[in-house]
Image 1: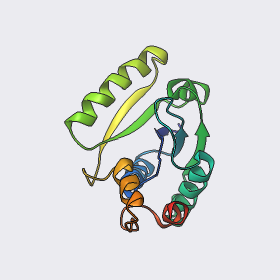
Image 2: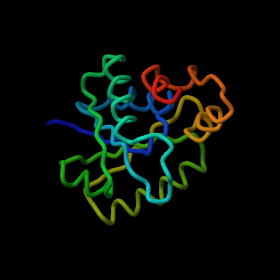
Image 3: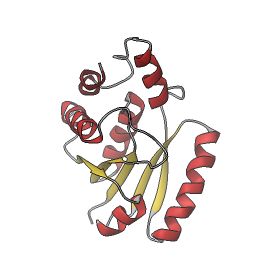
Length: 155
C-alpha cells in the first residue's frame, strides 16, 4: 500500500521549521506532497511558483526523493480527495497552533471524511514565516532560519 501524506501551507516563505516537518513526514510515509497553497486571507510576499521551485531545490538538496512540491489554489481537502491522499500532516509549535489546526481539521473532515490530520511537533517553537518576513524587512540575515535555496529567493 502506498501511504501518501500532504503537508500544505502558504510557505511565504518556507522555513527550516517547515523543512523539519517535511523531513519527519518523509521518514513516516512512502510519499509526501508539499503543497504551496493560496490563502485568500493573506497577500503573498513571495511568488508561489518561485517558492515551489525553491522548496523543490531544498528537498532535493536534502536527498528527500519521496517528496514532491506542487502549487494549488483550491481547498486542501478537495486536493487530497482528488489525489487519493488520506493523511494531512500539520506542524504544531504550541497549544495555540493546536487549537487553530484542530478547527481546520474538523472542517476538512466535513469536506473529505477520509482525510486524517496528523500533528508533528515543531523543533523550534519561535520560528515562523512572519518572523522571517520581519527580519527580511529589517535587512537581517535569515540564512540560519531558511534552507539555502529559499535564502537565495528571498534575499
